[in-house]
Length: 257
Image 1 (cartoon, helix red, strand yellow):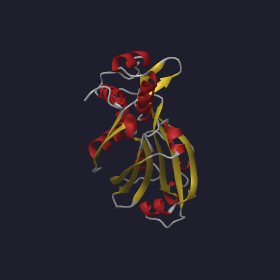
Image 2 (cartoon, rainbow, N blue to C red; image 1 turned 135 degrees about the horizontal axis):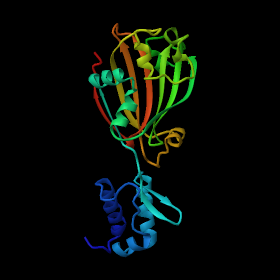
Image 3 (cartoon, rainbow, N blue to C red; image 1 turned 30 degrees about the vertical axis):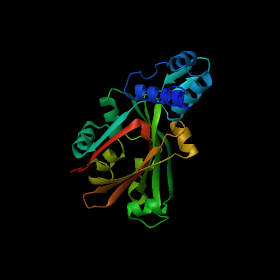
Image 4 (tube, rainbow, N blue to C red; image 1 turned 90 degrees about the vertical axis):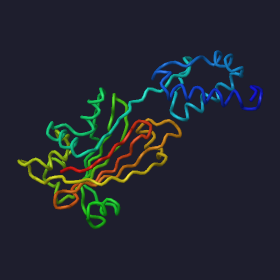
């Protein structure tokens, strides 16, 4: 293939830079060569280089800064391993699973409580909690961050009959997480989580989700629906999480007993 064929420099710039970024030849935050330098290297025009960089920006691989150039996007990567052993270990340590795993990976976690509300359950929420549609539930809305960058949005739902009069229904952070509070043998609920069921699907984000998670154009999200059951196989928690697909790896092996 000759370099004067239509589209050749354009595609080669995209493919070469994408490969270099994904294989780690360029470090997160590293500045790419200037448009002039790339144009010289690939014997292409600067508008061609600019279009190629725009493709990489749309893929979420680079960010551009006015007057400074293009930089490899710096992203926290969260490897979430869900196993019964990990759940119990984090439970004993009194640390929520997300926080514990992010810390173990040398990063800084934060769970930001956005709101706590009592609402009528949608049909989906009701089905997962074994309730009638419209039944009263408590929802706790949170934003998960790693190194100050948002990585996921999570809404957790609880039957009002279980949550009423407890910290779950209050707009306060709960040390160790809600499941730790539910399982506390000296607490008001004293139920034991036995298993969870997760349903994952991928799609493009809504405009609000893209804004909340700071997603580049074209970056999908993973929608995770998790239902947690107690030892009597009664649902005690239902979560809907929207996670940025470019910032997560998932490993599930769930047996909480």
